[in-house]
Length: 393
Image (cartoon, rainbow, N blue to C red; front, side, top):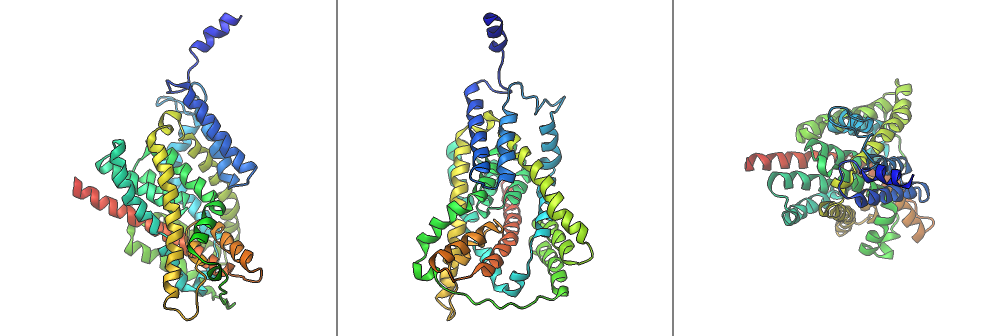
């Protein structure tokens, strides 16, 4: 009997892999993601299906992925939702339906923080271009990969996935998407040390006045329409994401599609998040995931995230040099796209320094601006890379 089992397992190899130890490492990575989702509650709706998908795709024989002739269900989801860029676009409809842009409309100057907090994208883009040749990646491929790695810093998973899918970075989609969504879920851990390093206790205790004034319904309706038009003229490549985000917001604000708004916020958001998570996990095939490039992507993604946070904080500190009424520099850190997690982190830090300090609404304004800023930045990066590619060709 023992000999029979030995004979069976002697040919028992993992799908597409010559080294079974790599698959075992992926099991551990998947288990860690599931642990963080359940025990630490770090974005469980995303990390749990990503972790489970990583385990599924690395099981022996690769049945869930299949072959070109007979694709498995994860390959079907990947082709239908990731390759076509459908999942990122649909999730932005849901996000748009969830976001109330009223705080931003009351504080329109906060849009500048949404722009300043994208600083890390471009720093990381050029840093990645410098480092990739050392790993044997050159030319057009390096440009395309650098664009996706830079976008990780915006803490905007769908935009990162959109850029990576746009350039057909199939071999790197696993580490890119995992870095983007993992760092997004780790906002409460990554941002506070950066903020404390760049600000003094006195600066973190700055109070900001907030005037509660209603925003008229016509303005709320016109806002998504005008933003789509302006973005489409200035950065055409951002239209698929900006348009879907603003469409979702228009459904929310029009006042006559309450059922559709609730469906977008709940059923659509939950379903696409579930499918997106497990499909992202399915890209973490051991042979493609475990290599030096993955390590570089994870490292530079963190660098991008740190520089984006720092860019927003330093921009606020710069403005304070000229303003009589000072801005709490922590507001700048909320200019990333992790909505509303980053705003909550900023408010929590402000409350820790002064229990009576309430800057949540200003932080929410900057955070909403960050949603727009990251999408426009993603479109701009695509336009920039496309231009450079044409020059090379």
